[in-house]
Amino acid sequence: MPDAAKTMLSALAAVGLLGCSAEEPQPPDPNTPIAPVVCDDSAPLTLLRTAPDSLLGRPPWLEVCNVCPASFDLTVDDVDLQTAWADDGACVVAMPTLPWPAEDTHQARAVIATATRSATFDFDFVGTGPRGADPADAGSGTFRLPLGADNLRLPAAGLELPGGNLLVRFEPTADHGLAVHFGRTEADSNQQDLCVPTTTLAASARQDLRQIAVPLSEGDVVPLPFAAPARAGALQATLSSTGSALSAMALLLEVDARLLDGDADAICADWAALADGPLCGPCGDPAGDPDATSCIAFVWEWSTAIRVPNALVPVDAPGPDCVDPS
Image (cartoon, rainbow, N blue to C red; front, side, top):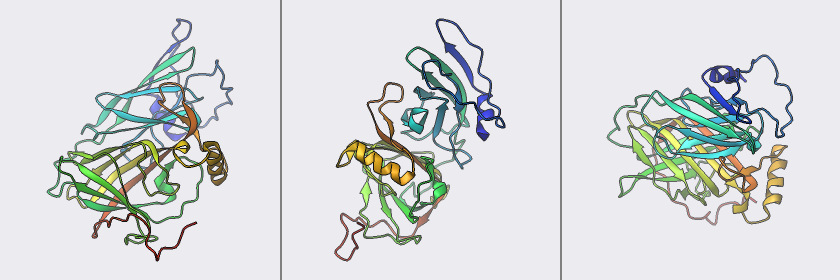
């Protein structure tokens, strides 16, 4: 894995095993395949990744992966994180629920644990750096987010995407926040598809030095491919100096099949058929034990999102001229 050697060089580990300390783990050789590991009580606690699988230079989300499923207690100094399991419990993804501080790097710590052992890894995570003051139009506007295969970073399941664009509108609120509204475009145009109902997040976004952030609440819906009510999530984006675009934007969305109508196991089986492999994995706090195995962590990201001229039109339900997608 290309990032593994680089990121592991900065990781310091202390492994507790029967009261003994182990040597620091060595970074894997990217040219040498990792030998198969039996994931039992004796499996190694070895981080394979401390940088996200991202195409962005400064991604606003984190990803930490162990060689086997484990519990993950991931923290970043002075930042509250929304976390979710990924890769069937072998990874955890995370994103702050408030704007990232305007710093170049952040100190991060991952505690990986099984029933009998734990390991602590400290590493640096790249920050947004200085961002400058908010523009006069501080965040209000509608932005277009392409829904291509490269924009869906997780799950890495080869899902076929229908294309088109997601629209996100930030609307100033009375409490000095930003209401976050979503819609879809007609095919690959800038024109809103008025047959797709718009949605609004329950929480208001906050903005600080051009960084916009908002947590997702249980039941929030974003009109994405494979959309479903969220269990949790977060959004982060950097506003350009003029307010005409967003950069380094990412959306973490944890979906739980239990929040849909129907049997969760059957729904997960349907999703697995779409992906030619299992998608559902652990639910609950990654620092503890799973409370179910019916969740999927999606991460979407965009290097640039341009502002479109028209405001998002609220759509409560498809009109009479709309074709039933079923």
